[in-house]
Structures are given as C-alpha cells and as structure tokens.
Amino acid sequence: MLTAKRILLVIGGGIAAYKSLELIRRLQDRGAKVRAILTRAGAEFVTPLSVGSLTGDKVFQELFSLTDENEMGHIELSRDADLLVVAPATADLMAKMAHGHANDLASTALLATDKRILAAPAMNVRMWLHPATQRNVGILKGDGVTFVGPNAGGMACGEFGPGRMAEVPEIIAAIEAMMVDPAVSRPLAGHRVLVTSGPTREAIDPVRYISNHSSGKQGHAIAKAAAEAGADVTLVTGPVGVADPVGVTVVKVESARDMLAAVDAALPASIAIFAAAVADWRVADIAGGKLKKGPDGPPALSFVENPDILATVARHGTKRPRLVVGFAAETENVVDNARAKLARKGCDLIVANDVATGTGTFGGDANTVHLVSSEGVETWARQSKDEVARALVAHLARRLAGA
Image (cartoon, rainbow, N blue to C red):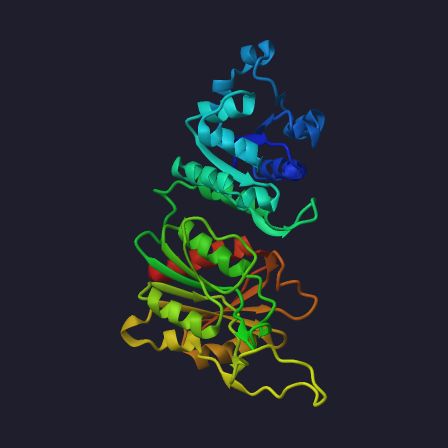
C-alpha cells in the first residue's frame, strides 16, 4: 500500500521523538520514501545523524538555508510529498499550524502544502486537556487535518492520562488508511455498522464494581476499519483507556444494561459486531453506601444474569442486522466452545480467541483468531489487532455482497 509513496515526516520536540526513528524504519519496510524535517526542539531529543542514517536522505532543519533552498525549496519540499506526518505533534507545533504561523521550516512547510496532514500529538496530559490545545485541535480538524492518538498512559513526567503519542503500528495504520483511494476501496459505503467494545462494569456499591480485563483495543480497531471501509459506524463502548476512532459515532456506557439500551438505539444496521466482553452477571442488590469490613466477614453477594446482548440482537426479527458477529474469549477448547456459542446465540459468525494467561490477548496489541460459522472454521495466523480488524471487515464486506 505504501510502495513508492513519499512521506514528509515533521519531528517535533518531545521525548516521544524517539518513536519517529522506528516510524521511519517501518515506513521504509512498507516501501515508502521518507524525508524528514527536524525542528530545533526535536533535535534536542534525536540527532540529525540518526534521522539521516535511517532516511538515507538529507535532514532538513533551517528555513534560511541557501543550500536547502537551492536544492529543495521549502514549498517544493512539502508539495513533493504524498502525505505530511507530524510526529510528535507538540502543543507548540499544533498552535502554529492552527493559526497559520510560519517562523521556522516545519511550520512554513506545513502552511505551504496542498497535501493531506496526519498529526500524532504528544504532550503532558494537562497541556493536552488545556482549552487552548483543544481549541487548536478543533481548528485543525476543521481544516482537514487527521489525528491519530494521543493515547492514555504513564508519561515521562510521571503523570498519567491522555497525551502519549500513538504507537508506531497505530500511526502506520492511520497512514495506510489515508493512502487508500476512496473510489477503489470503500466496500461498506452506504452501510451502517454497529460495534461494541471494551468491558462492562457492574456496580457492587458506589465504590466497587465487577469487570474484566478487556482493553477495547480489538473492538475499537474494528470500528476504525469499518469506518475506513466507508461505513457509517456507531461504536458502543464500555470504559476503556484507548482513544476514540476517528470518523466514528461513539456512545460510552458502563453496565451491560446500558450497553443493550445503546445497541438497541443504534439499530437498524447492516452489520453488528459484538466484540465487547460483557459481564454475564451483576449484583442483584447494589448497596446504597460503601460496604464496610465487619466482624461477620465478607458480605454475601447475590447475583442475577445480565441481558444477553448478542442473542437478543441475533433474534431481533425485523431489526436484525443482515450479519450478526459475536466474539468468544475462551481459555480452553476455544473452537469447540465457539461452535456451541454460535448455535446457542443464533448469530452468523463467531470470532474466537484464546485469552488464557500467557497469551497476551487481553490488553495486548496482537491476536490469534478463529472464524467459526456454519460453513466451518477458518484460522488466521497471529497478527496485530489492527490487521485482524481490517481482515475481518473485508471478510464481512464480501459476505454482505454475497461473495
């Protein structure tokens, strides 16, 4: 997809600049030609020598360079690319982009380009959440800039929250999505797709809840892939730490009952994909106050079953999607349990994966899945969750078209 594509990478100043080196290598692995602009602040974190060694090309740094302007003027530099990628996109760089500043090579090239721009923000959580930054993000989105991330997590400054630059595979996936010719590869254009993702939380008292280890990475990747395939996508998600996919309507819920209500409101749809790990049970009586330790030992909790969202939608009658897809997270007898679930739920396809301890599926970036249907079992080699998502969406698009 990226063979012979020309990427102009703008490296901003931040600790996340080290990821730009890996990004260059991975883009080249996919056949892309990478040129780099290294900002003065960026050069405090990665050296021109390291960047140039990887790109195999001159590293551009100065706006007022007679040599650079003679060999590759700043306007031609930006227009020669198929795509501009700003990674890391610092608060300062985004402010310049949003307000049309052009006082260094990076901001000038970004202002002079007529090509699409992908920004991968990276900054302290307070800087990211500051109203000024959020205003600038809104302006840039209105100007057509695409964003990937930021992700939530621990930072070099010791704080936790949104602000971490997206990981290299996520940036690569976003670049590949922007390189797709919409006229050629939008097989779900005109279709509505519903996706559920993440865990649910079932309250015990105002402080405690029952949940599971689902990160939402696979479900969110599926929603993103469906949107890239041209679908009108609604993502119903439990509490997760991953960023909302671009171009997707996101509905955030807590409990299984909340999720069922949101799913019902999002119907009808051509395809419904239930990747969420919904809690099977909830506490029958939620305590009004925090349960305290006492001499009588732990409280006795009584449980009731949660609604079966997958089975409910699969048997929805007139509102049933044409394709209903469930997920089976199993720790043993993966395929046999998935076959039983397929028959029990009444859906068209089960995507089964092994989540036993040591597999790294929960919370990880890769997955090994088995597609179980009435036609048989199709096993896919281990791959990234983004790759699983794109392959699954392509598979469902073919099924929807009757292929």
